[in-house]
Image (cartoon, rainbow, N blue to C red; front, side, top):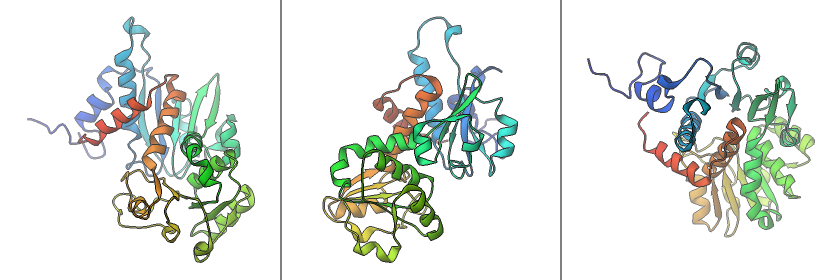
Length: 308
């Protein structure tokens, strides 16, 4: 009986194609280092494709004896809570990407954290080494790189939309670049006021947005993400020629929010750029290997053409 290579072997299980072509399970061993994504939900993530295919690319370029090759496997760990997962898995894994809602919750379980985590209060990458767990924030590192060429315009004032972990990373990145006038807005006023106190920014309500004059808009909410691509976050009334507009949503890469900003003369930055830059930094932390921006985009374009 023939089997569709794209269909799952059973409900909730892998397709034949994913097991063989992406995870290469037929080549793995019991001691293969295990990495993964910790979050809830995780079904929307493409990170498992990106990291496994990046490893295959690196492997294809290695020379020497077969036994000198390091192995690698990256999977999704979908769980609504951290404590039980950490208790059961911390001795079996080598590193994790961390996504919503665990980017702040994971920190108490770590032995040490980087300066970026200390500054932002957010951790999206953890690795094990020398018997310790270390936390990093590659989101913040990626945003610093992305914002740097626009620093002069962002100095005219920057508005961060959203009050979640990505908003905290964006604020910390702006502060590292010495951006002084940083505003924050979001539906959750209690959370916004808390971040105002903790991070030293100014929280403004939606009704106050029209009175702002800023050089940059940093959109960090999931509003406009596939499949709800027709939705718009607040802040569009501030669009004007020359304003820098970043949207953390990377699916689609050109959101309605960014399309509208571009139509009104704004300089737009897609969340795809942040996602791929932070993954590049994360892969280096996981494996010790550098991959180029060209490699990252090559693999990403390949993923877009896949039927998984």
